[in-house]
Image 1: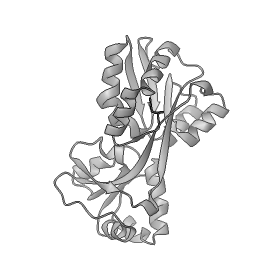
Image 2: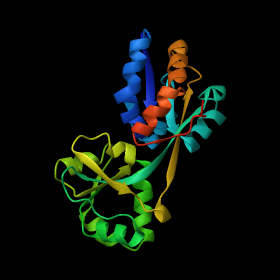
Image 3: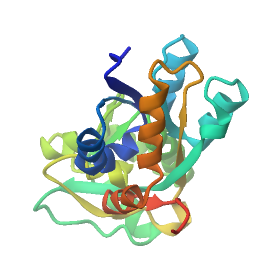
Image 4: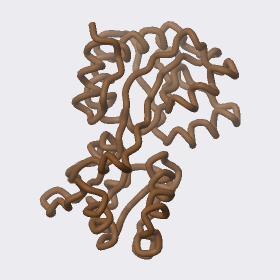
Amino acid sequence: MASPSSVAVMSGLALEVAVNRWLKPAFEAASPYRLEVDWRPTTAIMKSIAEGQRADVVIAIDGSMDKLCADRIVRPETRVCLADSILGVGVREGAPKPDVSTVEAFKRALVGARVAYSRAGASGIYFTALVERLGIAAEVNARAVAIPMGFTGEKVASGEADIAIQQVSELMSVPGVAVAGPFPPEVQTVSTFDAAIFADAANPDGAAALMALLASPAAAKAYGDGGLVSRLPHS
């Protein structure tokens, strides 16, 4: 648990660029609190919550937030819809970017590459089912670089993989990785991220201050700059 002078956050990886690059410095400059963020896929966060782990604020995919609200683990009245995240393809900076603009081009790019994906993340779970649906699972899995969780772009940056599959915002988190493009529209999926305060937050005042920033115009800009699509109301 974070100290009283900090705000503890459990957050999905998709917001890492927006928070760490812009919102965390702004929050710490304008408040007496420090931000301590536990960055993991929503599936891993939900498992920890089920085992009794808590923080002050949670940022998670909307379906999981529905459950947290229904179970009163978070305070439903504090819930804010922050941003949408889409899936994309990343390559090592300086490497040729594959054409992923159509489903057929996307399939060709995947079959000819070592593809990194995350088993625990929403993107990896979706991708596993997608390659089955596209009929290329055997070819892709034969050369795939699957990680338990974390940033798949790290495997591309290190040269262990040719293509990284993850949320566009998560690909942007890794130095040395360039975004080749989003998934083609026909096979794209959108994840919506919400934030809320835990019912038993140790620092409710700090949590409220953070929530105000997460719902601000400055946050909307940070989400856009960080590879997301803001869902905040237009001011």
